[in-house]
Length: 165
Length: 151
Image (cartoon, rainbow over all chains, first blue to last red; front, side):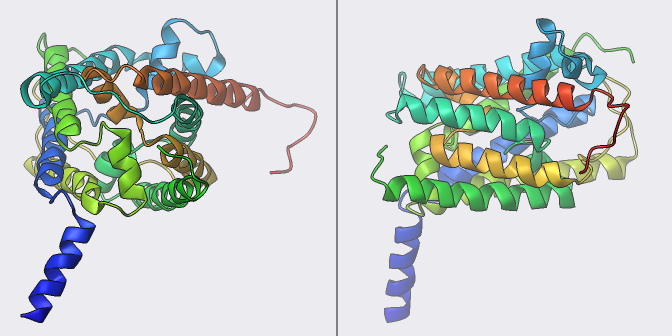
């Protein structure tokens, strides 16, 4: 049928690599969060580590906050686990290392803004996007809609200016 | 709150599953995130969506069980943050950074694990950004006895 063909073409256009690997990866991310939650009651986001780790070396007022100092040890362990999980993926499925071609200044400037924005906004893609949405938090929904819309606009603008990758 | 000896090992294993998922989903590759944001491949919807649904179901189960977490004695709660304008301002800055670089914190850690050493540039930037934010916040929270700020 013509409709089937059109639908097929549209789906291939929107999802050129299918959806299996994305869905599988998403489920694993949710299971990682859920495993920690059921065992410890913690709801781990990834970006607080960027602040809590500073508490080991900096005396800034903000870095004396008990919510950072009191959680810094398990956040280091959580992050090391994420790095190890990435390494398992590389060894078992990727068959070696892979490196990005995105230009260094994009990584650096983007990274600084991600560091400021996730801490000011109380969370990141995992804290708000996974744990917050999973908690049906209205605050998280507002944050996710905001960062998604702005990121889409930014990426399209940068691309339109001819910067690749 | 006393911690079970398996507390930190459990957090590590959970982090590994989380990182494996970030690798498998290809979200640890900035190029894939940028393709998503440019509407070249919308598959990433299923990463955040799938993860939020699975964790949401597990959170709901924990609260329904009315029990306590075995390794810490904590009760099972939800991740709720208060809303203020920082949530929008921070989301905006994060959005510009994510759209520029294609990388977010968790994906950056996993990306480092996959051998993507240039991502250290982004992680260094993230630490710098977190420090700057804390520096401004520390200054802003100094008491100002003489007058009340206009905001």
